[in-house]
Length: 311
Image 1 (tube, rainbow, N blue to C red):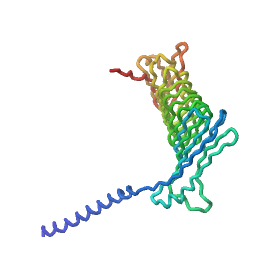
Image 2: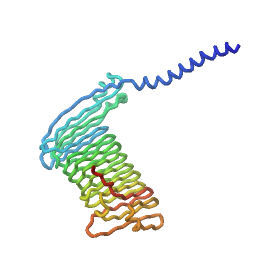
Image 3: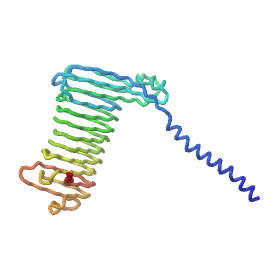
Image 4: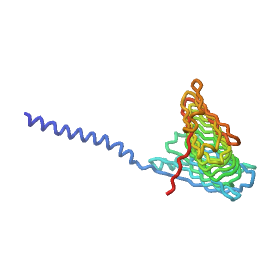
């Protein structure tokens, strides 16, 4: 009887193991489904004399704009459709549309997605990729939604508005106005006038010189200025702020943190004042640039860069 019972249980266990194996294998098989990628590439060059504005209106786009020393705008635009069935991707790629045109003092670069009235919903993942080279000192005006934007080696007046995604800035001069919503901003090696209005964004600017004004709500701010910083103002709400300076004595500070903590180097702790739920620090040395930060319900930290040990 005991032998028969053992004999009966064994196949049941095998069956259970087989069922578990199938359940585990099904997601793996689905993950291995190959996505078909269909693309269309458009290349175009347009004359771009001084005082011409390059205006970009992008949607679900990876956008890279780089300054150069030629009096032309060169555009390489890839329209992309992704779907497991190649036939579907090929059929739906025409829904990814674009416009490249110059009218008067404005060059327009536009991509968008559209289907005919009554047509079925798009099943493919439609996207665009821009590479734009333009005269470095011409003005630039960008709006990008649900994408990635990179600006590099530009020196003119720049404007960027982005909802969702990532913004990357590198080697910029001139001026830049950013309006960022759910889009993180990362900048390095900047010497410019920058104004940033952010909402639920992580803003990180390192190696910066010039003048900066940043507003942020429900996000974070990291500033790492160089000795060439002229001024920096951060007005934040429920946003953690960290300022890392090369030397404390390079700047004056007006720092205020409400309903949270204010952390400063030991040499400045005696200058911190507490009133109710607010902690403040003010220094007033002669002829030093001012770093001014106000935040609430989130930590505010001032510290110095760690010294690099040369070997």
